[in-house]
Image 1 (cartoon, rainbow, N blue to C red):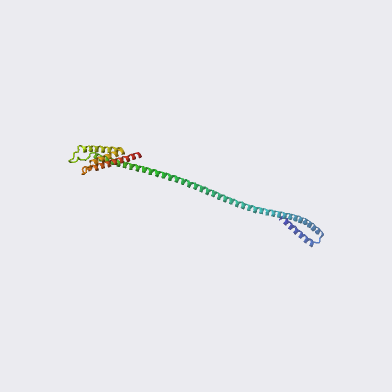
Image 2: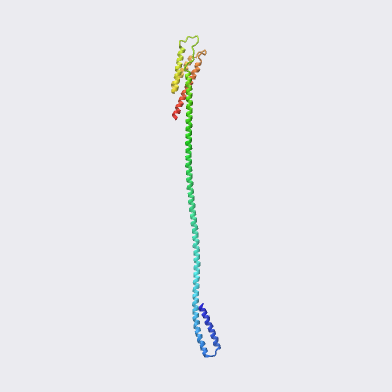
Length: 263
């Protein structure tokens, strides 16, 4: 810019000198003007050279500025690209972390559900076992109570049957009227008492074989005591009652033995 101003000043001087030379008639003044013109011309050339140098510097500076602007633009684009890539990587990393977090949470939820299912299964198994144990204990208590009740009932039946047999120890048969007996009825009555005792003993001892033999003998004695005219017919019913009582005792004794073995 300074070279340009200087060039303008020189041109102004030259123009002024030329106009002065054109209007002047003095040789001395003419030489003076010529010298000034030479000086101005030199200064003009120097100013032109400076100007050209300034122009080159300006052009170089303009080019450098253009290059710098291009570099700046490229740098800005690179920064934008890197920021975009960085943002995308950050977003992808976030998605990956979220995905991993979701996967971990899903796995943890699955493991928790599995643990809870296992705990529930174990709890249900324990509860089922407890219920089964309670049911078994209840069944055992009920069975024990039933056995005790049945035992008492059987003992009561045995007691009553034994009383029946006690009542039937004495035979109710009478001697036949107008017939000489010669002690036959008395002998049968003694055998009656003996066989009733045998029935009682066999039944209470649980000896089925002896009871069968004793009851058969008692039936024979009852038949022998019974008369065609109906006299001593009660012996048949008494014998049947005694035999039935003995069978009740035998059966009850057998059942009591089973109950005692099951305890």
